[in-house]
Image (tube, rainbow, N blue to C red):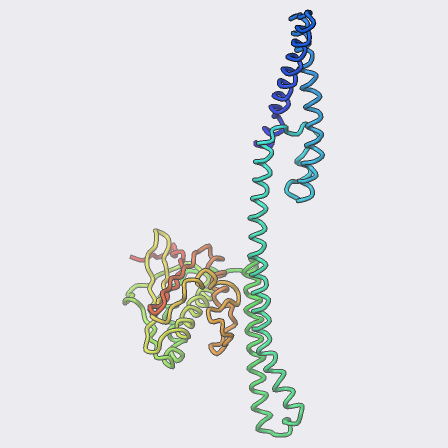
Length: 353
């Protein structure tokens, strides 16, 4: 270990003692020579006595200096645990010591940069949560205040405003439910009910559920090919349906009118398949792709919520897929379209031919 080597180093004191001894013996020899009493035996004895004394004194003094000064620096900047500096010898190898300090400083810089990124993310998250909750809350508050101010007496206005307020409450409930789910996913508190099922049949069911929504946008939901045989996978059917629904709803929301959303299921490796949802919509700018799965992150920064949703859909999808121990991917190009994909484990009972 570098720390062990650091404490065992006595090179500085050794070299310094040699220099002190050499200078002193040279001066002693010169002095004796000038007075005609040059005695090499005395010079040798003096050197043998001086060197260990100089080494011990210098080593003790330097160790105490470094222990008091450098340890205080470590403690002040919290770069090293106090327990890691023992009461034993401290290094006198300044090169090694400098390298250690630089290493700790580099680690701290990385930690500080990470904390700054997390702080920015926290600010964005709190701002987004506030915005998402504020809009429906103010809507409900506005309609209720209008009713209390006198509109309550008009039966037609009363019914209309109560219906609008109800929609605002529904949106709040929708956001809170999604927040609750993503919290459970993040702490690993969501129990997956794994079972063997046909992913092709599940995709077709989602197609049927979204038929009217896609028809309004004139977007065709289709498979990439005709699947004559079931493709059996082992996962939580309800949660995977939620993943597919989110991808397909997004492809309808942000797809081009008269467009197509295509779903394919392909062999990936021996025990895995990959499900791809590809559209020919407007595409996603590259700078947004790394943050797509963050909570409340939206590519559209205009603040418009005309497309609805809680802003948590993709974050929930990512956590669901990862809770299965699987991977999720996204590729997109402006003006061409986007592809979201995720892997699933094949069922042991059946496999794709």
